[in-house]
Length: 118
Length: 117
Image (cartoon, rainbow over all chains, first blue to last red; front, side, top):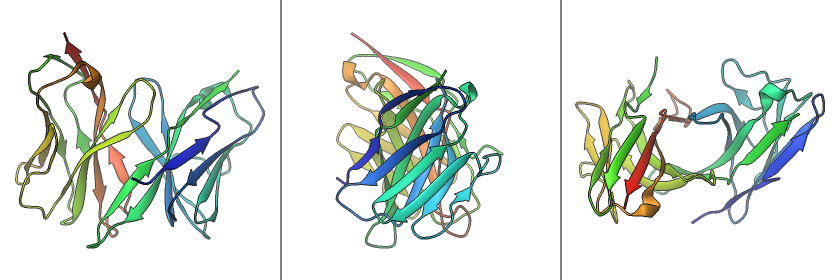
């Protein structure tokens, strides 16, 4: 199946710094990528939908100025957590939407990035 | 309003037995997709099975089958012959159509499955 990678897998940063997380589709082109956040023992919460070449669409309650998303190419989307604070510590997962024949689609998930803000 | 409901926070099953994980959903869309994912402690999301809203037959993938009851809006996952490696968190998810959900996939709260030896 299709492979989605994320880098880094883990990051620890100081409060107030910015962290960039990369999401790459390795063997396919993804016009749409999604960013999720997962707190411990909770479900995945959709943060935003990232479309190549256009501005991301953020879910209600997600600060677009804090979570900057750039989808500059068909294989790369980045999430930058600006001025990170301890409450931003979470597991961030990206996924790529791949249309399938017959009008359907499927999603492939990256392995996730664990962010810890001290 | 919660669109995906998983009412079982935790489930225990004896090795080699079958287990059913419940999932109900809510949508006004006619075209939607239902998914089940497994998330082990490593955190990766592993796709298990997919059911399209127009699929008349229940989906099956190896030991996984999806009991799709459209009128009841339920999409329960059945795991047959449970194995110790099946111990993980299981998420039910729904992807609505472009007009309703913009192809977004939303997840239920999850069910943690424990397989006993």
